[in-house]
Length: 175
Image (tube, rainbow, N blue to C red; front, side):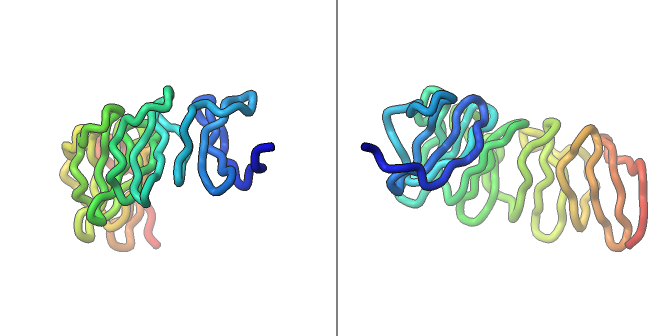
């Protein structure tokens, strides 16, 4: 008899990471192991990749269970809307589905891609980048969050706003 599941995450892209006997594996919707291997740690799929951990480092597998992103990062988080977030030397960057670093780890903090953009923090300022790492516009903010339905919340000093994808404030208010 196999050990019982001790923890389970939700199904994403038809597979769910579950913990059994101290290791993580992926189950299909019928409750069968999807791949022949297990991992020290695992997270849910996003954009065809699932972060997996071995020897306290993270990489990612694809939907066939093959290693797509080398296991060499401090952290890895899949994204539903774009490249996977990775952390190396305490800095965040992004990799594509083949494991290529498309945005080198260089940011103190980053949010995952949403609507083709990500809010990232350089030093104390936040800005928005495209999936190739280029800036969306030149404005920086004290706080910035992901775009949802074409709008993103930002803060500069005491002024808060929802901005559109051109950087124009569509609604403003003060703290």
